[in-house]
Image (cartoon, rainbow, N blue to C red; front, side, top):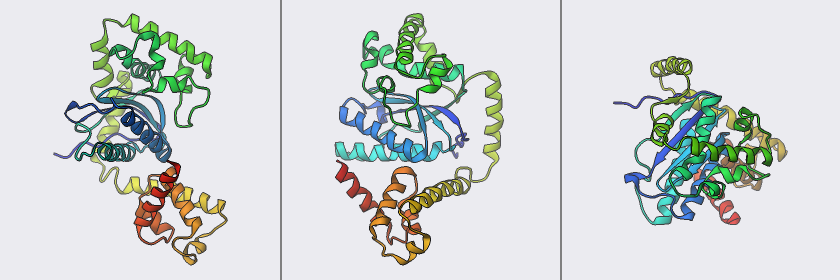
Length: 309
């Protein structure tokens, strides 16, 4: 039986959960945890995601992600594929890294969203991995990053602080941290119930939100090729906008694309930007830049990565 399609729409918020294959540890080693965080950052930039919270446990992850472009499936395919390849190379292994299909629970904005963010940030304390008073020291979480004054554009704290009427600064985050510690004490005997509410089913929210999403899901099941041709057309428009902006910056036109040599330095510059800021394939980039075989795009990206390393 074919899998049901994911519900995707612009601005959707998800609680995403994935486990290691056969429940094996994925993030016990710092290198693996860093690799996943790097992959998440690259994915967020490519796909325009806003990451409100995340935590890496020993054998699974939790992400709270907003998708302004409605591109959950595309982004998760990229994220899990890239991390899987990096993990296998590092461990000299092959095969599936994650167990089955990742969970994607839609989250209603407002109180439900805030509860999910709290749940994700409190996971290390509830699991006994870190003392409650050291919760902000758990490095494999978004919480210590949120406490910093400078954060990447894709990692967002303002929405959950706004719901709590807290200022979007370190003072507000310290107040949020104090609140988290109180929540652990208040919910000391509700661990399993919270897990059921936050990690099971297909959505987290009110009955009214559930009904609205159910209608959306019905329409999606009847749609032909949802997530296929239509989604690709939308994405290509976004990729073309980035290409047009890049051409403008290097003072080139589409005529220059046709007339200049395939490995022109400015084409390399644009190709690397497209790889970084979009999820466009090497084939699409090579075709748009008249750069010959897609392997050239891959080689440029690899050389850039090695230089940075």
